[in-house]
Picture 1: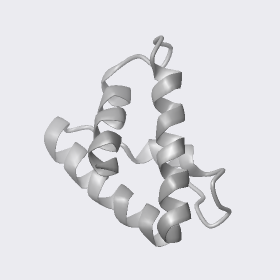
Picture 2 (picture 1 turned 120 degrees about the vertical axis):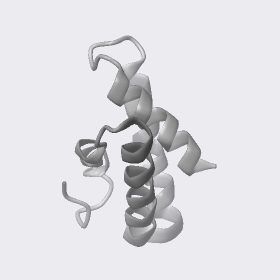
Picture 3 (picture 1 turned 180 degrees about the vertical axis):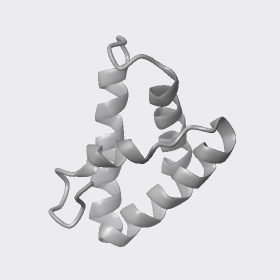
Length: 81
């Protein structure tokens, strides 16, 4: 369920203006999901989730969500992008 939500959030961010009204709200939720993942499964859970999300988004909309990995940088020092 979190994976589908992340796909929706990152797709929105990739397809909309970063200055848009909903953008900060979407960014905050992405960060919350990262914290939930880390609490439940550590860095491995974060890596696994993001890898599958990257693959799917890149395939579906032909845009690369790698730059959004940095939104999880403050969750753990082991995650630095």
